[in-house]
Figure 1 (cartoon, rainbow, N blue to C red):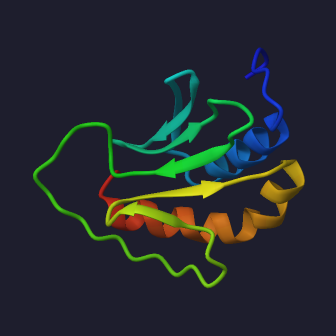
Figure 2 (tube, rainbow, N blue to C red):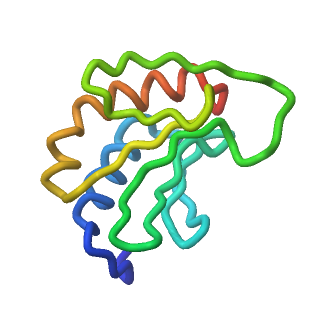
Length: 119
């Protein structure tokens, strides 16, 4: 993270810290030149390219699976943009935006981990 050069590095650091604080089992790895998070399986990966994109992709693991999950997350503020029933994206425009969304993101991430079968 020290070498990350990105216009929204403050957002990445804020959300990264939030994710790592949720559960002590969460581990961080770098995938596709961006932070990715897992317990038993990966469940969240940053999309940082092409800059200035700063998105967190929530998914159900890196391995293809026969299981068809339909995840349901309360999202009254419309933070989640669903790409499929088991994959969604949250976009951050700045460090301040990430901090403003942090309480809602914490609840979303906890629900995601519970439902995605990644623990």
